[in-house]
Amino acid sequence: MEIYQVKIPARFPLQAGCFPSNSKKTSTFLPRVAAFTTSSHSLTDKSESESQNRMFILGMGFVCQFFAQSLQKEGWVVTGTCTSKTKKKHLEEKGFHVHLLDANQPELSTLNALKCYTHLLVSIPPVGCAGDPMLQHEELLRSKLLDGNLQWLCYLSSTSVYGHCDGAWVDEDYPTSPTSELAKLRLDAEEGWLNLGQSLGFSTQVFRLGALSIQ
Image (cartoon, one colour):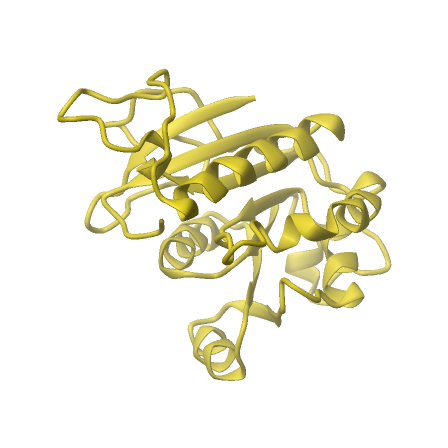
């Protein structure tokens, strides 16, 4: 388990296989996989089916779109989700493969597709009092991920989990003290995804993003 605090630069120059040079941690956070076993859910395009590195992004928002573009340039197969047909069309025009997903009632076909991917990035925020909507279906998620190809899981969180720090320097070791209800739900979601990933034996990480309104 690893937790990183990340300040997102203006152009978000995040590259697969390395961590931003101005971050506290400098070790590789996105390991490439040695092999990929195809399944009945594999995409038909030959170049995609032969790719060893396949990223599935739950929540194809602003940050993840830039990240996905960087991965695609390095030969990764990238698939994501969004919540509306309008946004789906917009993302497909940018060249992304996108599933519609209602995180409160996820379709089994979308969850089944996760088995084909080696890396999972979660960027769906908590909702109201319910918390992380995907973790409401934790046992279903667990059953879909258990026998798949996934090796790496990451949850995008927020520096809001630190609360008000009165101008103090804050890094990954600073104690969390969220003040808003949404920040508290973020911290709960971090724990939920870390526990899920670790229990399944995945390399599991949390990135706490700053300089971006994702609280």
